[in-house]
Image (cartoon, rainbow, N blue to C red; front, side, top):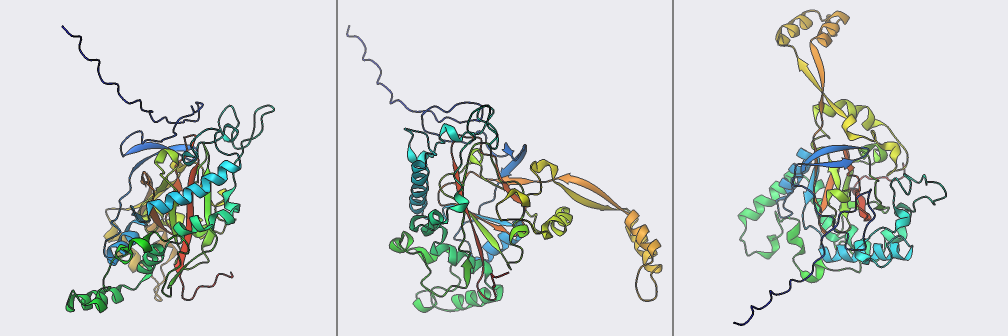
Length: 412
């Protein structure tokens, strides 16, 4: 009886490895798979928070939907908004620069951006630059000072892609004008080329493949109604570091109607340090005191820790005011005790304050596992931060600031 054929050999695969701050990374692919489904507990700052998944909005949504979502939630997550091949070209440009600077592990795949051991930050190599014994402090590339890299053609093709100009024109546009355009669009024949643009979505303007993947000069072909600041906040964040909770207004409050585009230069799951947002924090009653206090302060250079609310996001609590059940009676009493000129007496104000009970509530946080081409728009008053990078891979992201063109003065 012939012997059975041996089973076919299975192709050897490499299991993705999570590089935690307590283990030395093997020389394999530094893929960072999501550990658990949402909601998940993630490291953020010096503590931990539970996050649910961000609500994504289809880029093909009508302009009113895009604006309403941003106004409602304080953020706007758009999946596959930018051409992924352009994003990967930008990443290649950045990681090759890191490689030339000696910031990547020898022999590793360049695009994986695995950190060189001299850049590790943990118990053996020191924390935040405080080396142990005679060890050199961890090395980091200060990409915030590398505007030559942030404005290189490959990176600028992503950060100033024409679709972003179109998007912010939609976000800053007038509701009444859109309504008029949609009315005209409905009244005209669908085959009329002259009116084909009315009521169009952002993505519909970039259906031509050659235009979509243009890399030489991503400047709008029309006269723009929005502008983006020339400075780009490009970052490469190592193990153990993060951006603390803050509102952009404390850095750039003198600029009107500011919006931020958070763009990952490559995949960025929560383990790598993805963006974390407190939804509706730009308008919620629970954070009114934070917006009116901390949110109106002026701090140092944008991107520095001087503007953070704190290091541990769990320390931030919302404040809820509960009215007494006899609120209606109290209102009548206060009204009766007003002086003739309509100003309440001190006694009436004291009674009104006593009728209000304040209690603190924990905040809600959302995040996402970002892929190349995803972007997130953030309101200037939205409380946000990044998760802590718990991998051995550089987290490469960039912030760009946008605002309406008309009436803007940057010399303040």
